[in-house]
Each structure stands twice: as structure tokens, then as C-alpha cells.
Length: 244
Image (tube, rainbow, N blue to C red; front, side, top):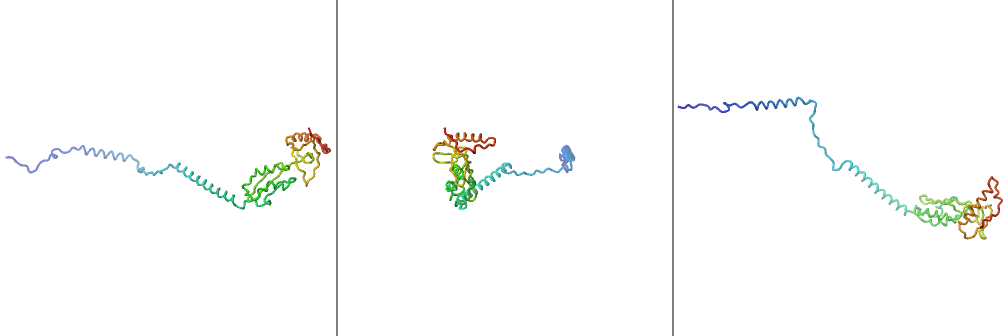
């Protein structure tokens, strides 16, 4: 007759589980402890900080900033220059009111009427629109004027400086007597000053300056020879004929 047992024996009781997995976990734990022991206790854990980058490189942004500043300064300068130009062009402060605003220096034999014949056209004009180079050229057409300069002074004044020619002799041209300089330019006799020179003959009316230049060169050489050594014999001359 069969006998039943009061309890059942499980397979796990007959075949206990292997101890290998537990040993592997123990070995892994030992390895972890060993790695931790090898790390220096003074090292801090590294923490990554996210860096935010701009949309433009720093160098490019710097150039754009300077470009903007340059354009702004240029625009402001243009506006300021335009404003000043408009003011200088239309303001009554810069208008030459009368001949009292025109100062003339160096004038001795040339007359004020000759100077104002040139400069009188500038009365009533804006000082910034007076053609100084043109006025200078016209002043130097006056026989007594060897060179001239015209300067403007703000707000409404002009200054004319004259350097006159130096006469060296009288010249008979037809029935008239003129003064003549070393370069052959003829000048009217002044009313305020008297000169004592020899009279040069042989000058013809209407002859060009290029004809008188070589004659005056011969005259200057003659005077230089007569006065060499301090003798001053040229003062005894009364007339010299330089005709061909």
C-alpha cells in the first residue's frame, strides 16, 4: 500500500543555486571600491557650464560698431557743412558794404582810383564769392603794380597789398615822357614824387614789351659798368639813344 508524504521536497532543496553570481557581484563591488580609493580626495567633481555664443563673432561686431560710428559722424559733418554754407552765402554779415571795407597797402605811385577800378566791382558782393585770383591778375595789369595780393578777412573786409615797380630811367615815346623800369615796362609820371634819371631815346609808340626788354638790358649793363668801383658816373648821363 502506497504511503503519502506529508510534505513535498522542492527541486531547489535538492539542487541549491550556485554561488557564482554572488561571487561576481562581490568582485565587482571590490573593483568599484578600488577605483574610488585610487582617486584623490582633493579633486572636485567636474561640472560642465553651458556657454552662450552670440549670433556674430566679436571681431565682426566690433567692426560693425565702428562703421556705424563713422557713418554717423560723416552724416553729421555733411549736415553741419551744409548749414554753414547756407548761412555764409545768404547772411548780410559777409557782404562788402563799401570801399571802407577794402584796405590797400603799399600804394605809392599807383592811384586809389586805379585800384578801386578793379576792386570796386566787389562792393555789395559776398566776401566768400569774390574771385581773389582774378582780382590779383587784374591789379597786376596796372603799369605801376609789379605784383599784388588780395586777401579776405571775415566777416566782410578785403586787404590789397601792392608791390610797385622801381623806375630806372625816363623814356621818350613819341612826344610823351614816361618812366621805365629795368624790364622795359612804361609807367605814367606820378604827381606826388619827382625822379632824376637820364632820358632813353629810341622807344617807339606801339612797340611790344619784347622789343624794349633787350634795349633795357643793354642800358642796365652800361649803367653797371659806369658805376663799377663806386664812381657813380651814370649820374652824369642826360640822354642815351638805344635805337637800332
